[in-house]
Length: 273
Image 1 (cartoon, helix red, strand yellow):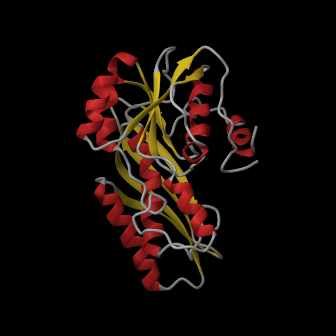
Image 2 (tube, one colour):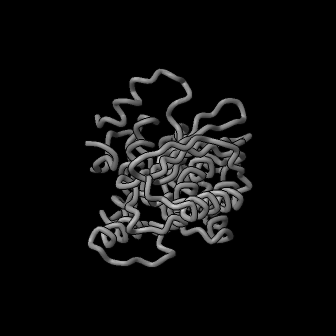
């Protein structure tokens, strides 16, 4: 067990286990976006940093079929950061939040040696999509085309430039697809740690394994920070979901079937070893 899961295992709240904590019709989620952990400032403009920080946090709400309402933002501000850069950061976070009808209502600021951002999203849903709910025989599918995020991250580490619309900079959230398909889905989550690791998480919480239906390359399976969707559903809904995917411009790939075994993908934590 890695240190992230070890820490989580020491918490006793019944609300822990999904992309967000569901209490009534309100969902609470929080993610950190830290310099030299999730990004390097030489890779991204301050505006890109603010936008991605907000998108990866809103992704948790979207993944659970929730509508973001409010955001609380904590920022560690490095000494060398100028007022113009602070303006750029706040405008980027606010404009990105507004795209999803979400309002930044407060938070905290501290001085630090690096640019660290932590955001709490408060959202609403009357039918949240949970990780738990898979059934034997369900199909597992992912949205989008996987692999670009890791490919471009590797390029950045080599000192190369990547496209400004790269999925590493600009995650694509599948709000329309999830909203329209929610009644047909048994379970789901966003793909932040890679398809292999996140499929394992989904199977672990449901106490199932899988049978492969289509090959998944390591390039696709190990690419983290995709923020695409991993979903499980009854095979009888495949044709309907494919129509919804086409209507919403969402590539949808079925790659496995839920089975009574202990089969897992081989993967390493993107957080700790």
